[in-house]
Image 1 (tube, rainbow, N blue to C red):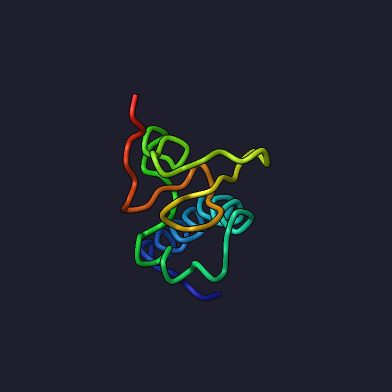
Image 2 (cartoon, rainbow, N blue to C red; image 1 turned 135 degrees about the vertical axis):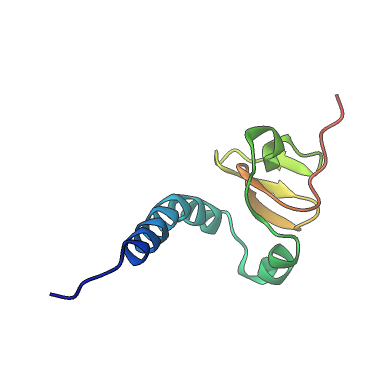
Length: 94
């Protein structure tokens, strides 16, 4: 049997936990994704919202879609997940 250090075991556990958390977010984002917009999304750090009040659904550039989890973004020029976030996020006017 191969012996692993405590550090290796903890690093592996952390990697698995991170993947388990990121997988549903990535799947949902892919559902609302536009492959042609990936370079723009990457440059704008599009991904999971840091908090619900900073999600796309709360952004001035977001328009809800009847599909439920997706909507349109004026900046991204296509579909986005309402629970995501990017660097261009701006609060809606009240």
